[in-house]
Image (cartoon, rainbow, N blue to C red; front, side, top):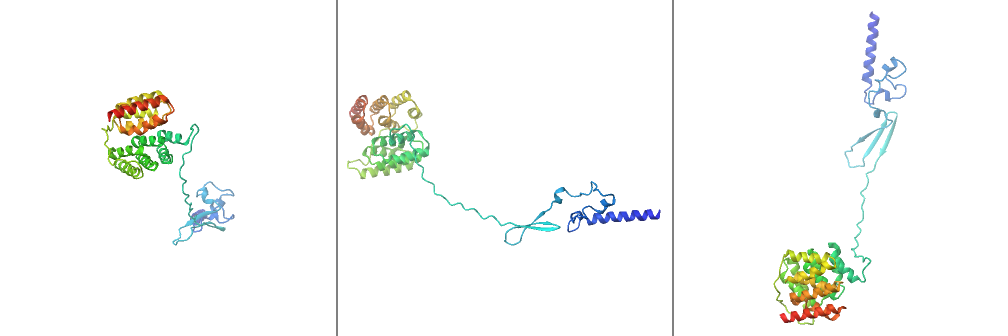
Length: 326
């Protein structure tokens, strides 16, 4: 009985020594070589490992266990992976910042699409139907075309475009074209537009034209009554811009009811640049009904240079009506 107690005491001491030595500062005993792969308690019960031997998760028994140290000084980060039978050191240099050189953007250019017989016609269509950026580029390029078609579409843009920047650019392009027929529309914009920036740009452009013109242009212009914010007139303008030929013709006829710079600007553009001869003739008739002197230079050009006789006759009749009203 005494011998059995001694044997049990010794077995208990062995078990305690295994559990205490399994967690040393150098890691568990089974990691230190093949001979001591299993604790002595496992060898006591046979030559196979019992299921409770692996008291740590499987990733603990990898060959290399990396340990990262945060260095207190400003040096490259050091990462050390240590095995208890070998040392494995990895040094990582910090990745230098990638400096991408700034490449200056090329100025955007308008690429002419198929279906236009000239660059001028493409620019005129761009001003009416494209995005704000395209319209701005087209308006700026129109200043290189010293032609009445350019003046007509720029006058329309000056009064009717929805973008403030495009309208200011239209005034600047009219100044660079420097034709006297643009003087009266610019003076109207300088005197009646609601936005101060547009008034300033129009006033500057009109002064430039007056100083560089051989004609005796007046300093002050007496303008007819202006209707601002008329929704029906705005609807007619939109119908002309986006409608087909029959809708555009009806819109031009409706615009004759409005004594407005905006209506006159649209009709001037229709008179000079519309491809339909009936719409051009209707625009001349509407300008005659309105009787605005701002349309006189454009009517004279249409009377003298339009290819269709019906348009030339309509322009002459409109000029006669304006002369009678004056």
